[in-house]
Length: 172
Image (cartoon, rainbow, N blue to C red; front, side, top):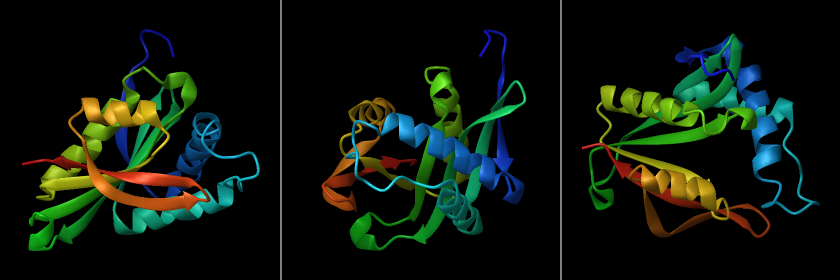
């Protein structure tokens, strides 16, 4: 990306899901190669396209563009009113934050995350959660620098011995 390139964040729609899936596929194969064992099943473009279509059906998708190319994606979902035992208020979930590797460090991820969080605020969401691969330490630090806090003891299995950890951010 040239120094003069401008990143534009926009709402994405049904015609974008295949591109967003390709961004996830390229990024995941690059970023997670040290996390998943060689024999782990690889994601497919078809499967990821279905996941992005499903995400659009229940939430909002945002795409980042630079120089006419879609280079990043994120989705944001309003999960509704949370129970009082979970802190109450409206709960949202952020997921699928992917930026093509050659654009890492360009501020694109921050811009996408900000767009998703602004969307959540506009819906009255006061608490947002997300999942991160436990071994994806650089990304975990990235979220922590932005105020996200680990939810202790909450994990989910992704594949074999690979699992996600939960993070939370207050928007209040």
